Length: 226
Image (cartoon, rainbow, N blue to C red):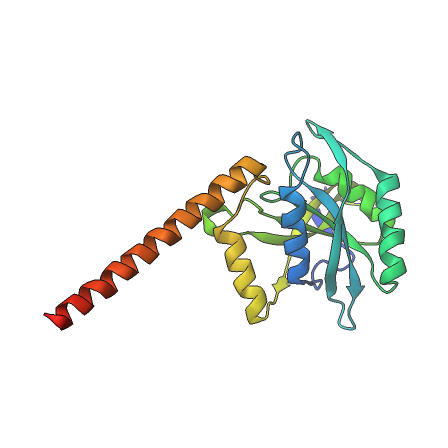
């Protein structure tokens, strides 16, 4: 009797050659939405807008957050809000279409497959962008994924995320802003009192530097005249 071998294999329409490029504005926008998120929300989820370049690269140029609620691995998106925001954006930039979705945090989570399934109905082969807004170890890890089907023979078993190449290019001014964002990362917007306290601390530190500078100048003048 001949031996039969059943092979598990991944298949995706273009994951092997697909790549993505994300503009700095998208990262800044996602970080801002994360800081302004509702108190009960642990992460931010949203839609990615852009276009497909001539070489097939997914060009991610814009984004907007979508309200959601989640419990355990169950996620519910505000689909009406998502569609209304899409209409508003396309009135200004009609060439920008849905290219995928994003979430904050370190990599893919349990509920990601459910959200990706929704966006797969919005656009073929959507890109999933993950942004580490916590800037773990001083670095903001940004990754892009697409979904690949895991099949057993002709039978599709499940879908799994596969990472694809991601290009994050910045001009010098954008790089400076991004570096500042990493070093001054905050989890939530400070209250008025906290903001005033931080401002006063910076002001006192500045006054202290001025006093030291004046003392240094006076000391040098005293040495010259004696």
